[in-house]
Image (cartoon, rainbow, N blue to C red; front, side, top):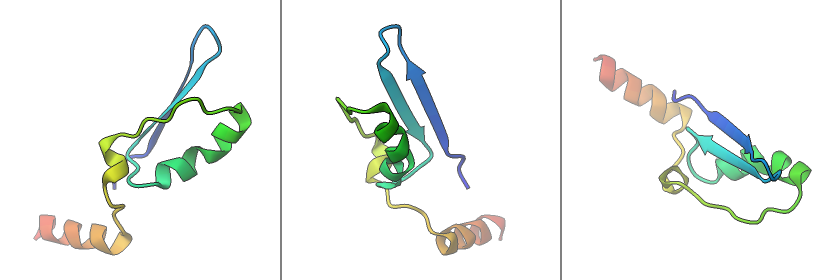
Length: 70
């Protein structure tokens, strides 16, 4: 399973940037929702190519691991 990672950067003017890696689909928005609510106004949202990928389910992951080991 790919590692999920959050990167939170606060610049000198107090602007906050949250980066998400290793999360497919809209799950990244769910992952950052509480942070965004705590910060306040979201001025801009940019999505990566991972946003457009379908999340991998546990069954798909198990099947992929079996194919790779066999």
